[in-house]
Amino acid sequence: MNDKAKFNLIFAVFLLLFSSYSANSLSQTTSDAQLWVDGEFNYVFKQKYLFQNEISAQALLAGGNEWFCISNTPEFEWNINQYVDLVSAIPFAYTMQKESENTFELRAMLGARCYLTPTHRPQVRILTRLEERWAYDGNTDSWDIGNRIRIRGELIYPLNKHSYFEDNMWYTITDAEVFLSTSKDISERFANRTRFRVGAGYRLTYKLRFEAIYTLQLSRNTMDNNFDTFSNILRLRVKYYFD
Image 1 (tube, helix red, strand yellow):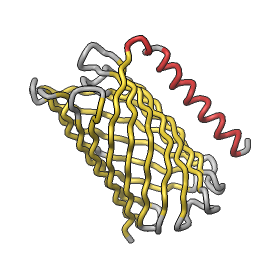
Image 2 (cartoon, helix red, strand yellow):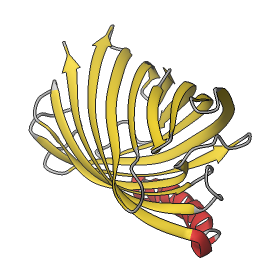
Image 3 (cartoon, one colour):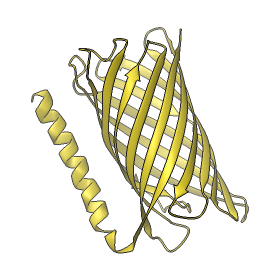
Image 4 (tube, helix red, strand yellow):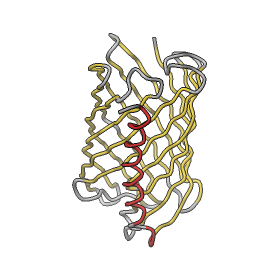
């Protein structure tokens, strides 16, 4: 199977899943606009291990009552070979769900990233993650526990260079992700269901990279009558790699 065929197959599957979720919830949907700003710090050691820490601030700009989230995600990756990375993380986040309700969430994540085209110009990848979630509600002084599977198909394509590893390089980002709950939903305002992203990035040097990504996200409000929301999200990200 050539690169184009692999890409078409992956995204046909994810777009089908996205359409299926969307069709089942169009009768009770709202829409909003959000801004996410990320700072990502990376350290590679022994040429196969990566420690990454992402700090993120997310806010609702339009389409509902005030909502914001501040999160920190320390992550460890192990490059097994050119085809597989193992990934693990322990994210935690504080969220103002609405004016009178705040939550704190801690997660444990294990997963794997598979590279379908490791030696080709387009990087086609599949990232699969299993998450265990613990959410604390300060108003009720109670913990909500759940777990889910996340599956994301990704395409990274260098525009002005032949390799993703060259400096002064522009590249495109396209991916689609589904969230599959394997237990009851945690009570939250934006319980993710599907996410489709398209954007662009610029690698100035090995150390410094910038990304701007548009995300269309379908989520469910499991706090108030289980209605669905289409979110239009602008995500701005700075990546820094230490020597």
